[in-house]
Length: 141
Image (cartoon, rainbow, N blue to C red):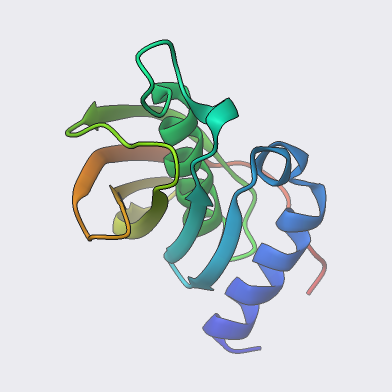
């Protein structure tokens, strides 16, 4: 199985059980080894009392992109800790795109950066996630 095939099968397996991302309206656009791209169209129910996209929604999008990137090798991997920096507000109707990229992978620990942009390629937020591999696989090989 090629690294791309493994990443895609890992994503398909995870997506079937990722009820939270699906419930939020997140879409999985692509996945490769150590990378993923997800999107979310911001709707009224995603907005806070200021009329902007709630920070927890953009965080959930970035966290999901991180999860698909760090699990792309069919090694069960969880978040150890992460940090989100908000740059600009997203608005109802915006299409947010989260692109996760592996920065480092040593042993069981990984570092991933996620850029969240809108449909105009404006930077909305950055996310850095640190992962930890645990025992098990997403599917049998």
